[in-house]
Amino acid sequence: MKIGFLFPGQGAQYVGMGKELAENFKSANALFDQANDILGVDLKKIAFEGPESELTLTNNSQPALLVTSIAALAAMREAGIDVEPSAVAGLSLGEFTALHVAGVLDFESALKLVRLRGTLMQQACDENEGTMASIMGLEEDVVHAIVAEADQVDRVDVANVNCPGQVVVSGTKAGVQKSIELADAKEAKKVVELTVAGAFHSRLMQSAREKLEEALKEVTLEKASIPVYHNVTGNQTRDIEEMRGLLGEQVTSSVLWEKGIRQMIQDGVNAFIELGSGRVLSGLLKRIERGIPFANVEDLKSLEKTKKFVDDLKVNN
Image (tube, rainbow, N blue to C red):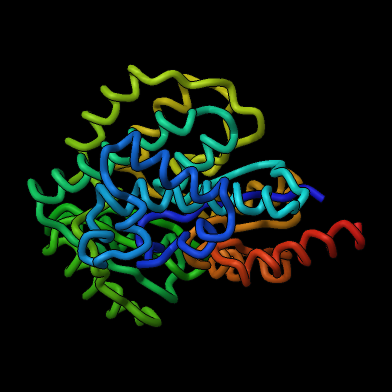
């Protein structure tokens, strides 16, 4: 079996994430304590106890999600679940988690980068008021045409291509509102304006991208030990400088999640484990490739299910 590990992004957070694993596995707890020391912020308390308003702040949720995912992996290993990934991918900030697991970024560098990334993105939101909307039930090319027309009213971009029939648009309030009107006219199955701080993965994040790219120049990246599939291209790369560029570009570019998952499967990945808060990526996976086996680890119950999942895969293969 070739198993892909997946790591969630912003929006998957909830108060209490990682708490059960940290209380039961020393390695998971140690990661939260280490994160507190590195950042000088009680990230552990924010993740475990909230309040939700503090956890949802971009500069808190991004590092908290990263630590929760890495802690889930540590707990899985401490529990004796004998499985290593053949490839990794992460949604948006989850790409930093994937790069850490692949040995490209050390824990401290990954943590500081996502904390900075969250801060810069929040600043960009404050500078350029924007929003996002999820359009369901239309083909990707139809949404691209809608965005091209709406962009003539005000700036709007395709932010995420998550799975068949689910595309997220991002931009100014006027641009997104025009996209919603056009999607309704095209008889989209459902259109939902998202509750977000701003227009992520759009041109309105340009200032965040530029500052993050400056910070990335000072960070040491190592060669990936396993393939990492990137949001901007949907493909893998082992070239260190290309990876550095993609991490900056990702802030303003579309997240090609569906393409990346399909490419992983085409390259031989035939099972997935989602590590960290929630099961958003598992839900998308079901819509991208129905029937492919998957599991997730976010608490003790899901950890036990994943142990059985891995055991069954070994027996059947």
